[in-house]
Length: 341
Image 1 (cartoon, one colour):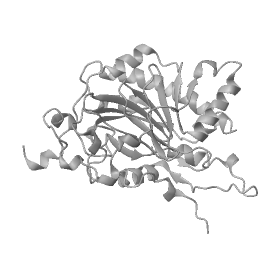
Image 2: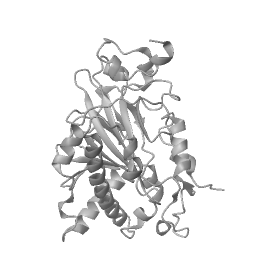
Image 3: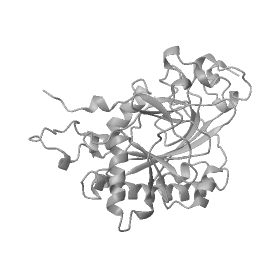
Image 4: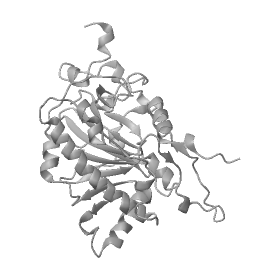
C-alpha cells in the first residue's frame, strides 16, 4: 500500500491486526484517559421521564429540565416516543464504506475527527450524514445495504420529532415561549454520525474522541450497551453507564449562547476498551447555516447586570471555526463573546 494511502486507513482496518496502538494514536502522557481517576459509581446524570410532559405534571417535568440543563448540561430520557423497533433497526444497520477526509461533504465515511488538521488520531471510524430536510440528502446516502436509506430516514424523522419536543420543554424551562428556541434556528439542520469504536489493544493510551464540547444546539445519543461516554462534572470525569431504552441528551454551544450562559455546553469524551467494540449514533440538531444566533432578547437585561454575553454570528461562521480548531481548544464559544469595551 502506498504511503499516501496509509493515512486513510480506517481504524477498523488495523484494529484486528495490531497488538499495540500505532504511534499516531498515542496521546501525550499529560493527555491520557487516566481511568483510575474517573468516577464510575455514585451520581450519574439525571433521568427525565417524558411520559408526563403533555399531562397535568408538565410544570414538574419542565422544572426537571431546568435543573438538568443548568446543573449538568447532560441528561437521559425515557418514554421518549421513538419506537423500539426503529431504534433496533438503526442499531443493527450494517457498516458502510465511503471514505472521505473532506469535512465540507454532507455524506462521508471517515476516521478520527479531522484528519487534515489534527496531530494525534482518535480510535474511531464514523459515517456522517446530513438528514434534514431528508429529501435534500437521502440520494447521497449509501445505497447498500439496500435497507440503509429507509431505516435511517425513519430513525432520523422520529428523532427530529423528539428533538422538537425537547426544544419546547427547554425553551419553557428558560422562561421563554415554547417555540422561541426553535424559531432562532432558521430552516433548521440535522446531522447524524454512526460512530464505530473497535476494540483497542492499549485503551489507556488513546481516545475514541478526546474531551470536547458540541458545536451544535442539542445532541441526542443512541448507544449500545458498552460503556464509553464520560462527562466532565465538578472537576472530574464521570462515566455514564448505558441504560436500555433511553437516549442521552446534551446541550451544545448554540444552546449556551441562546440561553446567555444560563445553560452550558459540557465537556465530554469517548474512551475505548480492549475487548468490546462500541457503536454510538449521535444526532446533532443545529441551526441552518444562514441562521443568525445570539442570546435570546428576553434573557438580556442591562439594568439587572445580565448583558448579552455573546455577539451575533451565523451558524456557518461558527461551524467553520469549530472544524478548523479540530478539538485543539475544548470549546470555541469563548471566541464569540461580545466585546466588553
